[in-house]
Length: 87
Image 1 (cartoon, rainbow, N blue to C red):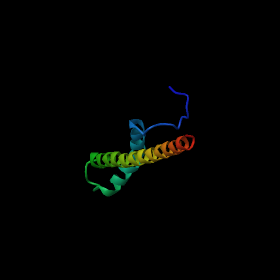
Image 2: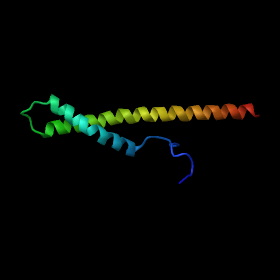
Image 3: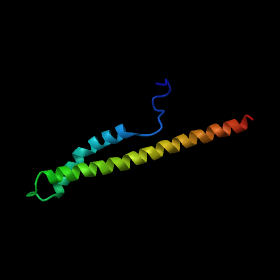
Image 4: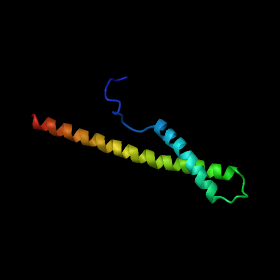
């Protein structure tokens, strides 16, 4: 393991997606419980909430990955400018 900055990573991976899914599971089930018919099976709001949490975590993970890639691109461009300047 490198001893660099702990914030220096390439992408938000499966661990981040899993944690975001778990974080959104409670609010997703609660929202689905409010929407689904009260006489329906209890599995419906849990399933709908879980699927909503997974989809929401996917959007969040995609956004975080996009921001990470933008930051890395900016760093690469500044390094390239410094290299050209010193030639």
